[in-house]
Image 1 (spheres, rainbow, N blue to C red):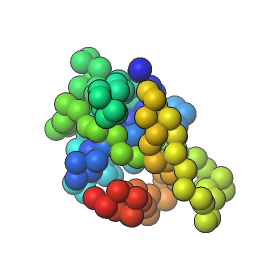
Image 2 (cartoon, helix red, strand yellow):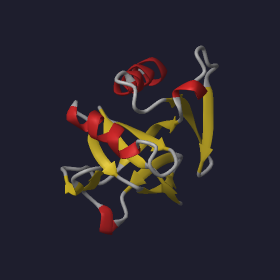
Image 3 (cartoon, rainbow, N blue to C red):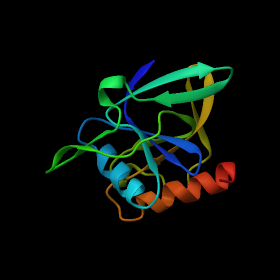
Image 4 (cartoon, rainbow, N blue to C red):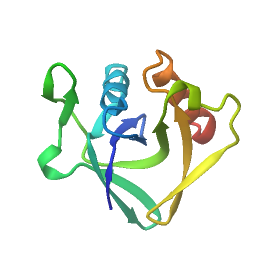
Length: 138
């Protein structure tokens, strides 16, 4: 399944960032990469269910490329695949629920933890890392 999104690997956990074009997926990925995450795929992500494990990979033509607004496509170090542990839906700050219930989404028949955050908040990368630690003990 090909999805519009960006995927990074944080300490062995794949995180799929979803949102409409211009919502801040690549910008948030850049901030996560700058603090130690690894790029898996930007703009388009191939998802496959391999024996109950949801794997993310970049389409070959996009492997290692990250769109950096104002600079264009930039080649960065990347990993070929990651096991998805969390999906992050990007939304406006006013749409973020202050005290949300635990949520999941189904991708390729696999249930994955889901959070919603405002991507341009300075704390967005930290929120993702905290969510990973508390939900899957990374």
